[in-house]
Length: 70
Image (cartoon, rainbow, N blue to C red; front, side, top):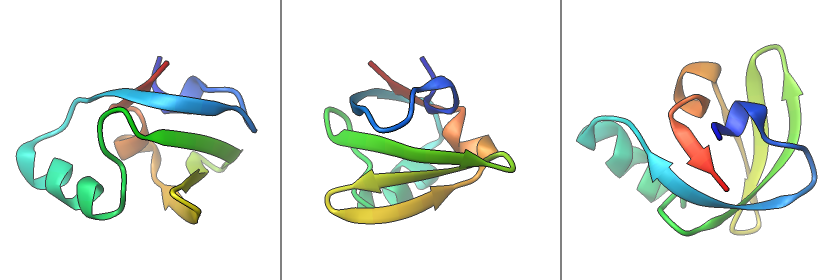
């Protein structure tokens, strides 16, 4: 499921990132890689606040719909 539909406060594993290579490289530099653990803290105004490797990130809805978790 895309991360925008993910439940809050539950650890999830990233299983697919469906973006171009440039965006994938940028997400990797932020710690968002395949098989990494991510926790959604909140959904606010189309943005997703999440925790990746002990750091908080805000993802806009366009990027968040391309990150799939299980």
